[in-house]
Length: 319
Ligand SMILES: Cc1cc2nc3c(=O)[nH]c(=O)nc-3n(C[C@H](O)[C@H](O)[C@H](O)COP(=O)(O)OP(=O)(O)OC[C@H]3O[C@@H](n4cnc5c(N)ncnc54)[C@H](O)[C@@H]3O)c2cc1C
Image (cartoon, rainbow, N blue to C red; front, side, top):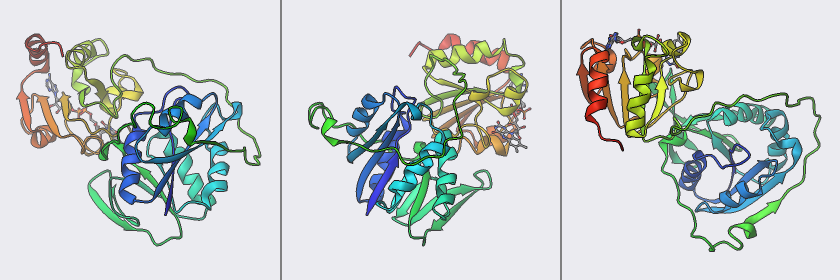
């Protein structure tokens, strides 16, 4: 059995997800190769090669791949598919873009958002916005998976110097497939943030509609800074312009699995809960003792957030 993992990166860094995806791949057993596609990504490939359990890196380093377009990466994966029984990646925005196309090209059904691996062909995945867990048995010739990274333990890195030339020995260059190119890159907007990444943070502080304004989100940010936490928001807060789109947690936002989730002025709608079911401990700050978020929380502070938040911030020591 051979597994191909499509590495996700931002052209400079390997995303934190990858160590968890390799953790998931190891549960399948078998030999794990990783595919790194991009432009000037040799260092990314070197870092990927140091992940424990990776057999070799297939590297395609070319200007054409300076953006992870599904239209370009899919033909490459199709070309490699014959050599592998399982092709997997993170169910982040890159995986969600490329893998349905890959599955269609291979005439297979992908199994998406996998949260548990029972065996080489049996997996759990959430359905109905996380309200039920489906166990899927794959009887197709090949298995195409996207994995919820936050649900799996990450692997470590091999010690410096263990792989030849810090991983260089494991890197194999591959050729560009025949492509009909009708996609080109025009512009990219990136949000700059000095807080931890929402999807992998161990503490997340999020605000909802009750925060009241964009300016009032400063209090949420202050609490997050004290705890060295990532900042999130509900769709209501995003739609009202209080918080940027990439902070949204939930069914149509990001899926998180922190050790601690602090939900401030958030009612706990099903679509929001769909994104936080992996949180280990939940603290709700809400003025309604009957709010669904309070019902599922491990601890609740009942009262006006405008009084509770400043008090909490002043009592906490900087982490
Ligand atoms: C197809 C679809 C997809 C969706 N996807 C998402 C998604 O991905 N993520 C998401 O979050 N939502 C999503 N939604 C929206 C979701 O249904 C809810 O409308 C939204 O989550 C509610 O946001 P909220 O909790 O901030 O607001 P509300 O539901 O209005 O809750 C505000 C809470 O704050 C409390 N409160 C009010 N004032 C104070 C105060 N002063 N102090 C303390 N507490 C106070 C209230 O008691 C209440 O519990 C989706 C909806 C649809 C239809």
